[in-house]
Amino acid sequence: MSKAVRALLEELDLLHLTTHEDRVEIDREIERRTGEHCDEGVRELTKAEFVELVKQVIERRRKKREELVAYA
Image (cartoon, rainbow, N blue to C red):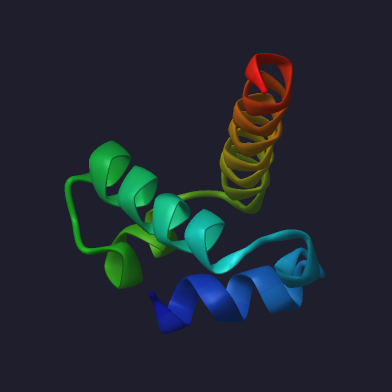
């Protein structure tokens, strides 16, 4: 997990909303979007873009959890 991503999550008071798996997924998404390692890539995103990315990852996790409950 990226130290820069974790630091930005803390700065924006979002760390407590994410799980370890979310943070790994955030790292992957940053790398996919920027084409760089997440520590460097996170610096290319605006704070608004970063917050939107975090919200998308959290929402995907919520939807997956709802689907699992629906099938159970």
